[in-house]
Length: 307
Image (cartoon, rainbow, N blue to C red):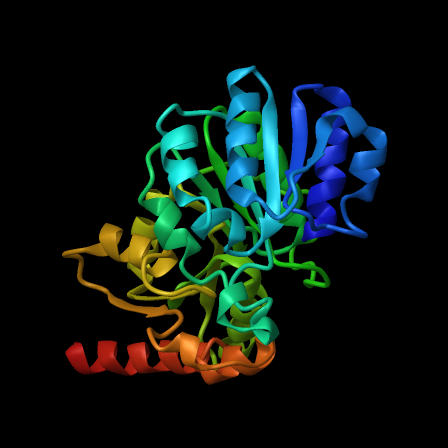
């Protein structure tokens, strides 16, 4: 995803001299092309993320469109006051880009996990939040946020994510993307676990259960109409590499008071106690195609018993 992002940003910067890129002393082997093409619009702020966010706010006040790039939680948790007071309060067009969302950097330990970022950013005013599911969505999301005024948060994986979508994508902020049609249940995914949702749908199809699969890259604004439409399937399961306060919580707020079997698959509260690589922790926390299938099947049984 990060390669798709920087390619798109470089193309945008070539056409629009307002676009800048700031980094907190990382991105080597990724950001060099941008730095070489636009050296006057590339800033390495060093390991000083709070200062970097302040510089970005100043650039935005001067009419620029700065993209701020760093690992997982560093430009979020370290910079929360600057994002809240300098960026969101003044509704500035600062675009915050995190690479290594969710469990991507799990091998480095809890300090490098991005599993509370959606919750924190959803609480801020004016902030648009996008968590693409594959490189195609990452490209489209970069372009969408660049053209949208006000603060934005782009939550990326790292590299090597599978391409799920084929061909061009009709990407719009606030709109879900239908990956697969189905009437028996709805799976809603955000971020790089989109491949898990797609795999689960294939397993369910072999069992005679036709799942609608929605990619929900846009968390704020959320596609409320798509969530309401999912009510017709009776069973809704969401999946994300995040804890409480993310996609599952956003959907729960929409579904409050509605008659539906909804299962949010997300990180447990004791996640910090565990370490391992991304695939190991996905398995430990039940963020797998097999567990997603179990959630759908349990909802089907519950619906039958209720009727």
